[in-house]
Length: 582
Image (cartoon, rainbow, N blue to C red):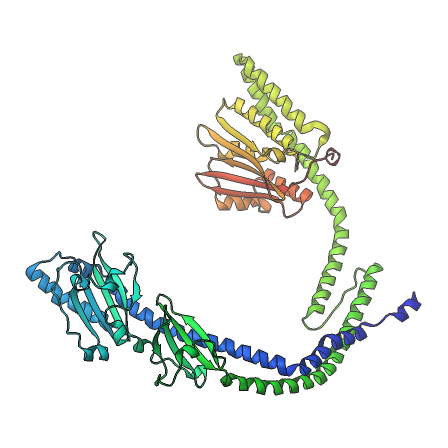
């Protein structure tokens, strides 16, 4: 034994070798490969950052688009404006609502977004008078804020209007009328009558593309970056370049390797944002990082060699201390404990070891007490099985039936009583099958129902596969007895017993429609001392925990005036006859 121990390799050297293979060698390899790996990583990281920046620009543009959309939505949601434009007012009243509400409302809508917009309301019917300006080249180029009211007949035959297919609650961005000529794009949205939900017109909010994209910050994308806005047919709508004469746009937007092309879509807007970024603008960073990476790798080899030695020594000392304690525990020194300073995995191991030693010692002391407690609980069950009060009341009922000559009921109650005690006293079993437990409670309910002239409405529902599962004997009767003695307040009482499997557990439920219990009463059942009530209920819970473990037992849910549900949870375990004798 001692000879073999001299040949083993200490963990200190194993750790040093592991660190050399897992840390030092990879660092050396990374250092020799630094040029390609670092350049590729930096370029990819730069590309990712640029993509994020382009999408951020897209989000900024999206914010402006949403700001413009709010103008149209404000008019769409204005039910009072819709009523005025639906033609409910005539003559002087129409003039009042037009001048006092409609015009100010449209004026306010035009000034709502930050961008300069043109608002045109096209009405299906001439419910309001037209108000419009002459569309001169000067004011169209200037992009002034203004609003107009026109009749829909003016545009009904135009191609862009005939091609519209907008749902009643939707909208569409489109280049309508002279938008393409003067660099506009329009948001089109139907206006509806909220009383008939019929279309009463069309709102058109026009904005210059230049106003949407003019203040895009290109500094975050690098020098020489250009931004293009393309429509769905790949036509150029807008460019950040001041001079387009020397630019070959189709080539730039094609496969030009001197530029990195990044695209971003704008929600609800039929355009694509294209950013062209010169490749040379971000490759310089790759060359700088390459040199830094090589230097760091060299310094890392030296530093990791020194650190590995320190860590190996620290782990070796702690592992030796743990090994000695385990060997002492193996020899039966259960009072041996480990103490580590600090808070790390070794401290957790030490704490777990100390808990294990304490638990082992406590279990040894607990076995004898546990066995005594189990025998005492079983003795209480035997006493409870022959309940003198229940037997006395039953004999009283038998005597009364004999005097009244109710021979059929007398025969039936004696038969059920014999069946009840035959099942409960047979073989002195402590653990029985659920099927047998249900026979016991059925006999008990039959006896009680005969005594109470059929005023107990009971129902037993059990999944067939649970019949041969194991349970503690006499777990249902205390709860049924509790219902009859404390919950019954009406002429009849309903008791429903259900048994079903839930995963790896069996649930036995006893539900009634009686008085119910207050939360204070339930707490008293699980309490201790003089305030404790319901000893039979807590006894069932204790017996279940004793036989099956602390995770099983009884749960009570009750509501005053509605009834109580008792759930008994036990493990799904097959019943065997050789395990049941007390």
